[in-house]
Image 1: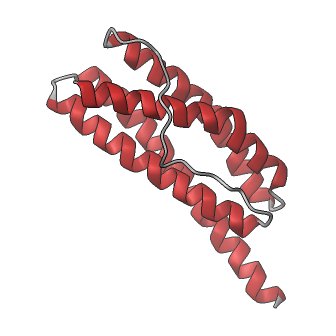
Image 2: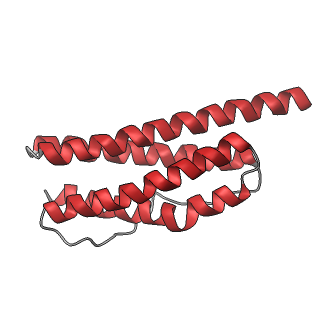
Length: 146
């Protein structure tokens, strides 16, 4: 259970960092409409993720204390492709983390928590799809304009 709680606290830190700093800055820098719209959508989802992780910690009877996750190192860059690269890495980090946490919750018999983590995971997977589509469009435009 300790590993689950530690992982949740780390993801709380990641989600808060994304919500408060990374995603708003990325939205401001994004030039491509699809990319900007996808970021805007994910800002709303990320706010929900913060609340969901806090709720899960509360259900476990644990303090809602965020613990820094050193794997989240973000330098946004200046171009849409650089933003796409950062967002892709971030989504993969979140997907891997939530997949592992869901497995831990299910192994502990915490089905309700497993369901909540699955909901977050599905939103992260969709966010990755949106970034991949935006990346493909940006790349196609780059080749066309070259």
